[in-house]
Length: 171
Image (cartoon, rainbow, N blue to C red; front, side, top):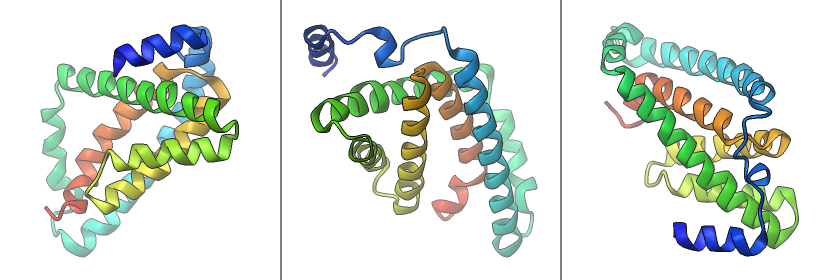
């Protein structure tokens, strides 16, 4: 798959900038991703606390011990995985769908659907992945920076796993 992507990029003469592999706008893109990340973290924490009060007597406190499992290597691994997933979602799927359809809304929905299907069979996670996929497609089309999106993806996945996954999978 990687070889086909590289060959197709060479044939189409896609620039690294077009694919989002760039550092020149890391600050601007990172600022937008940071603001959205903070909003999403607050939403995740409020949802977790609300849901915990209904179903879990110890609430969020019982999951704070999970922070100790996030070693520097574990955090780095999540960020690398986030960058890789955003590259696949944006630079491969979204760019190719834009080239095929020529319309941003159709391409964004198609890429977000593919992203959500990768998170099956958990319906709740698929729904959240679809929403997140649409959001990062919008951010990518604004700034085209895979690194800022990947770091955001990695950080949010850590928060998501700590606070929501136990509830989504029926801990």
